[in-house]
Image (cartoon, rainbow, N blue to C red; front, side):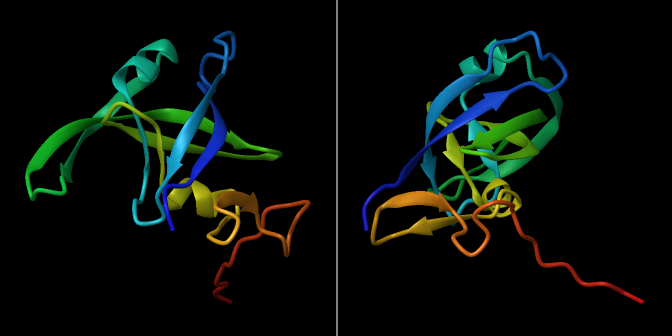
Length: 129
């Protein structure tokens, strides 16, 4: 299928005076979280919340900073999440994509809003009554 990228905007909701940053993020539905490089976290003045252990592709376990909150925007969708400080590019994982109700079109090789809900994100919830 090849690599798929999406243009997203990242910002610090705790410091709205900072200019949001448009980035080209690698889309990875096999990844869970948002990952950002250290230089981006520094520019957005994101605060470290804790360390989290990640397992790399070669099986190593390493602690990395987890920062937040961070606001993610794609087209007219938005979400608030945390991010792992890792790598040299932005990686958009499943949690922010699900929160914004985005889908990956492998045929078109791009990310789009869910065509069944083009005007508003949808979510599946279970109610306990």
